[in-house]
Length: 223
Image (cartoon, rainbow, N blue to C red; front, side, top):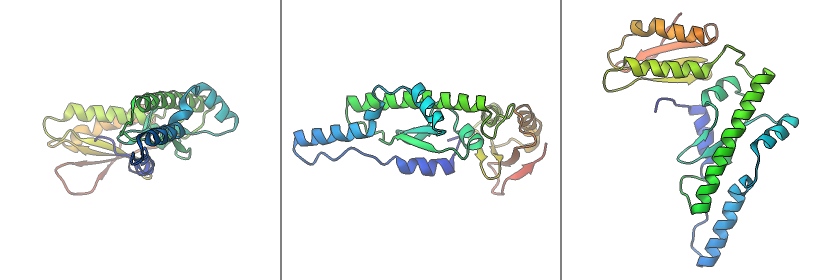
């Protein structure tokens, strides 16, 4: 996995434990219990309008993002790097805690609706926060784009085996990059600095680089 979001993942994955009640009762009772559980977990999405929810939340100064769960939990509709680096103080509410163990067709349909709702809600909230000038990423600061460009660069320089990866370290405010086998730091020094510069991060983001072939710690790269 190219992006590892340890701090967020630990919180979100802990929420992804909601399961349907076991069918250890009579069939009709089990079906009724399962339906009640499904209504409790996902019934909210039926008829819900994300634009109205955003408007209501903003009126109450309740700024947040939403995540949904399947194999894991994720913030959909916006980049997780953007949420972590630009809005670290905003809460992330898990609006679908049910896992990939889909119980029936209605469950699958409601999960699809919940994901679509969260995607739209998050995009609208992110756009409004940007318009308000809220957060820690005033233009042209763009952690998400820089992360995408570094990932693309690693794809281009690998030849075989490990493709390289990048992790955005919240506390260090740095990109930690593991280079593909055979690629030297000198080979990527200028391209990495160019990426940092054009995304408004020259004075804000650090670069830490090492090769997958070494057990040594990351070395700081100066631009």
